[in-house]
Image (cartoon, rainbow, N blue to C red):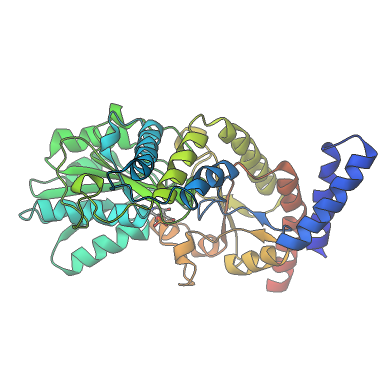
Amino acid sequence: MEKFSFLLIYLFDFQKFSENKLIFALEFILARRLFRFVNFAMIYFDNNATTQIAPEVIRAMQPFLTEFYGNPSSAYSFGREVRNAIETSREQVADLLGASDAAEIVFTSGGTESDNWAIFGTLEANPSKKHIVTTRVEHEAVRCVCEKLERNNFEITWLDVDEKGFLDTEELKNSLRKDTAIVSVMLANNETGILFPVAEIAEIVKEHSAALFHVDGVNAVGKIPVDLERTQIDLFSVSGHKFHAPKGIGALYIKNGVSLPSIKIGGGQENGRRAGTEAAHQIVGLGAAADLVKDFSAMERVAALKDKLENEILDKIPNSHLNGTNDPNFRLPNTAYISFENLNGEVILAKLNDAGVCVSTGSACNSKTHTASAVLQAMNIPYSQAMGAIRFSLARFNTETEVNFLLEILPKIIEDLKKMSL
Ligand SMILES: Cc1ncc(COP(=O)(O)O)c(C=O)c1O
């Protein structure tokens, strides 16, 4: 029933398309067919987990799946055209990240590979250094690596965060040692959206140690501007599927002068840093997505939608709490992580799913463990709130109609669940 009402709201919105009755009727018929065909009655508010590939990105990729299939390492022009497209993408990604030189961008399979490579590679390059500094709220792609290293006799300093999710930079400074190989800190937390002051942290790390500084930028890129050239960050991870490129493509920024052993050896691709024939179509997609998001104009609209969603939920639903801060200077513009006290987030998620709305209880990678999010635990959020947390993460394809629909159904869902729990 709720799904049906969403359809009506959505179809109603099509009136905006055309004042002409005949054209509107045709649009209406087409829209109904489309809905049936692609199960379009779904609202996607889980864009920190992954995003829809943008049509511009698909268009840019298509020729590299069909006519331009040459090997980019081949010497003839059919291969060189693909090589040129790869190098253009490298420049587009460098431009998005504010890197001074496109050669600082190495394409990888995504955020996990980039994070793993940054840490394992640094340790391989510095075998006498056995200390790593990271935080308790990192994504598993960093956290699980550090846990494994800890089991293998490396020493990890796990930095705490406060109840809003902020780091104490003084504590970070005091944790640095002569044998610190790497400091790894995320730019934007994938659950709360909290931003860590990575440019300032880079200065602290460089002033007080000889460690490399790695930033997991996976959930920040495309949502907030990044200017790596102006920072002392050595390594920076990127994942394409978080900003409308396909899955399975990402990059690691390696600042000029930083020596990181190759992650794969073989044919010498990627300047000898990551061997293997390049996934040209994916790389072209990443470049096109970088180009698409780089002016951040869509993010202003996304931020306004997120504000509406967040303010009205907090206003309308008793005992709902925002996790993190409401200061826009220290958070992502698209993320609202809200706890509904004494309720179970997984049940809320299931109810929203029945109504055609996709949200998350936190990191998508956590969803199998059925425990309160490690991030909320690190923030000391009471269990009664941590278990009822829902993350709404928006992107450029979300509409006000979708936000209105959510605001219409959510209070009722929460009220019903509260009655049931009583
Ligand atoms: C902060 C952060 N780091 C790393 C990753 C892993 O990226 P990928 O899915 O591209 O491997 C994610 C994915 O959710 C993330 O949010």
